[in-house]
Length: 185
Image (cartoon, rainbow, N blue to C red):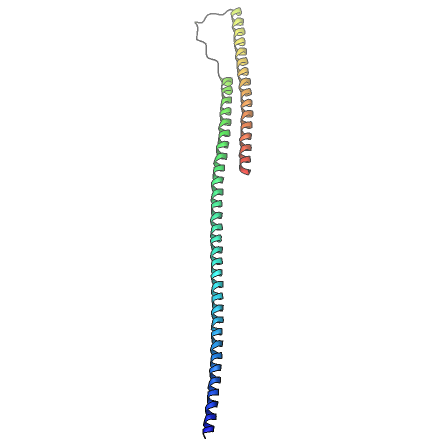
């Protein structure tokens, strides 16, 4: 019976040693599985952090692009209003000059429509035929001289008006050209 007890103890010890070895192997597998899970969790956390940083960077870039677009739109608005006011000033100046040139031609019309001033009344005498002829000749000469002066004034003002229109047209054209060049440069 002692031999059977010793054999049972040896079997028990062998079974215990085998169970211990299996336990150690299971613990080792468990440790490796935990380390692998921790590694995967860490990799997933790192990937999530990189994705968050990338998303954050993308969001910052999107905000930056939107801000730049708003600034560009505001700058275009300011530039458009400045160009519009400049063009308005140029056109107003051209029309003011044209009106001034047109108003100065009204002087010619007034000179042509002006009536001669009445001559002071003299006591009535019976004029002789020679006096009447001389008076008629003088009146015709005075009318002719007045007409010549009016025609000369009209020609002078017409020449001035034409010259002023040419000057204004060239000034307006150069201003417009400068304006257009400034717009597209």
